[in-house]
Structures are given as structure tokens and as C-alpha cells.
Image 1: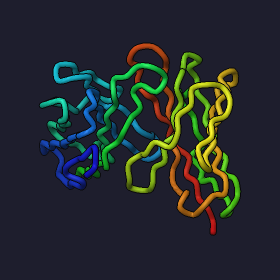
Image 2: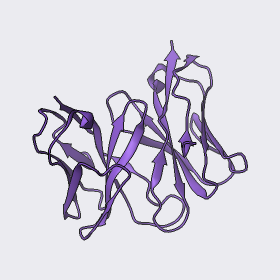
Image 3: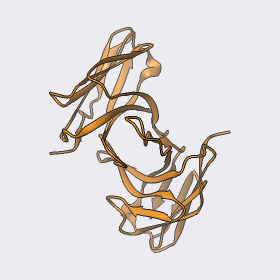
Image 4: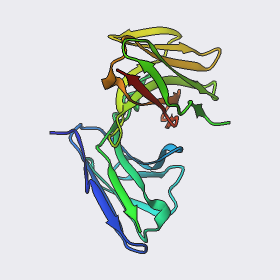
Length: 116
Length: 112
């Protein structure tokens, strides 16, 4: 079984709809992240969470919200989807160990979201 | 200036050749450097990390780091068609929690 899973894998929705993307992990990591990937722009951080009570905005959090329901679950919501939120969304996890390899990111399979 | 810069490519190399992928970064406080491989439509997977100046080898892959020049590279020896993918460079500062910043990736095409 995959260590980091995302549901749904593909979603087509309409402008104005509320959408939730879910992420679960069995790696036992404390830290979880949501990224979006757009052609020519690379991976950009939306939100990150160090534990259930610690949630932080990333570089592009406007229009998004998150919920950390448990150590293993981190969901991303688009309250009112708009076409420029069409992208590939990745959940990632990392351990909290220090040192030079701390926060090495491990990615889920991604969700392709299309907003019409 | 972007924090992490990569040429988007595509970089085309013949099968069996050495592919050289390059990355520069702007923050001299950067400590850790990662290379991820991403097949089209798939998620990034970690290939290697490096944090000391010099070379680090793992099978057909060699990561090279030059902190003075703020430059990190990935060499792929004996390139195979299965190496065709986008390679993402990622950089992390030292100290406490520091976010990982990704480059846009270089698309590699290995021609049979």
C-alpha cells in the first residue's frame, strides 16, 4: 500500500463549487503539506502543518483552507472554486528530524483538479 | 531573481550518454539540496540529497555541490529511455524548520 494517498485522483468541477481534497499517510510523519503544481511555475506551497494544532499558510494560501483531522489526515478545501485553481495538487509529508535531511518531502500521487 | 533556477529544457541526450542537469540557488544560507524525478502526470520521487561540497554518487547518479558558486548538479551516467522525466531541484535553508523551495524542473529526453 502507498505511504501517502490522496482522494480523489481526478476531479472536474464548476466555478463556485466547494471542493475538498483529502490526504492520508501511514509514514508516521508529523508534518504534512499541500502543494500545487502548474506548468512553468513549479511546485508552490499552499499550507503546511506540523501537528494537529499547528497549521501555517504557505506562499499561495488565498482561496484555500485546510483541516488537520488527525496526525495522519490533512485535507485541503477550495471554498468557492475558480478556473485559475485548475492545477495538479500534491500532498506531502516529512519527518520532524533535524539535521541536513530534515523535512525531506515525500509526495502522494496527486489530484488533478479542473475548474470549469 | 528566483530562489531556485533550472533550465526547463527539454534536454535531449542519446541513450548511453551522460546527462547533466544544473541548478543554481540564490540564498547562501541554503544547507540541503535534493533532486527529485517526476514522470509525466506522476508525483515527484526523491533520487538524492546532498549537503556537503563535492560529489555524492549513488549508482548511475552523481550529485555535485559547489556552495561557493551556489550551484548544484545531477549527472546521470549511461542514460536510459526510462530516465526520461522532469528533474526537480529543491533547496532548504539551515536551522529549525525551513521550507523546501523547488525549481521548475528540467525535462530530460533520452533518445534511443
